[in-house]
Image (tube, rainbow, N blue to C red; front, side, top):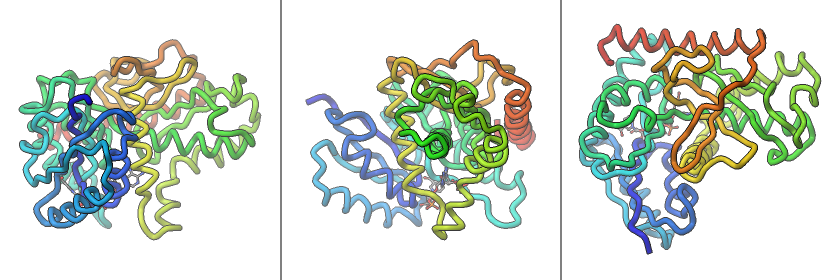
Length: 328
Ligand code: NDP
């Protein structure tokens, strides 16, 4: 058997963590023949709960799980790690100003970036799930100057999967018949799910659906506000679907996108599609050999342009805000 891959999960005792760890340990993150060693990071008050989850992981007797270590210290948790899933974050609470939210998360993601810089494995790949995910990823990346910037990504795969699900219902097709879905911008209510380049069974999705009113008044708001709808229905935020999307994100990054398809990932912009360089924004990307590339040459019409610009504008403002706070 091969050497185990070290996977660090922060916020491991949270509800996304609870849905995520068992799937990683069963082999769904990296592949059914790749042993993993889990390194769980929690704040001191939540270490005991993480220990409980580790007991349950033991009790599953997963053949691929080489071991579980629990830390309340970022430097230790990221030492030698190959894949880092940054789930723990400071959620927005009622009445909280954006500056306070960004500052609280700066206090989490700055030291984590430094710890990744100091001790992670050379092939480290980072996925940020904790919100505001794009900007948290930017903060961590800015404090890891020795790690290539492209190794820091944020999750828009749940938005992508939600868009696939909504379109499949509308068109009466299976999700696997849909290719080339795109989420642009920020993982927030301003995100833009784009079906103008998507395909259903090889034909243009927007033309197949041919319903602009559904697109504007139903599809886009349903995808963008799905998180709130889940909270309303479930009484708790989405957790299993977020964990599932995190698994998909890393699995696709490591194992590649299929020919004739792409995925959505928030990655550092090189200026493609007018997105300011350095911002971590969602794009259509292909992956191969553990590397991602932004899909080039898509035509963006005025409708899409306005929506991409709005979401990217929000990201630019968040970057200015964290600069103003001295977090980057
Ligand atoms: P969850 O596990 O439900 O969520 C964790 C983070 O994921 C939140 O920031 C949440 O953002 C975000 N998220 C991103 N996408 C989604 C989505 N689609 N649906 C739901 N959440 C999403 O939070 P819990 O409070 O249950 O657990 C958080 C854990 O993190 C706690 O155990 C806490 O102790 C820990 N923590 C650990 C830290 C560390 O390791 N250093 C630092 C801070 C916290 P949103 O709130 O916007 O939904």
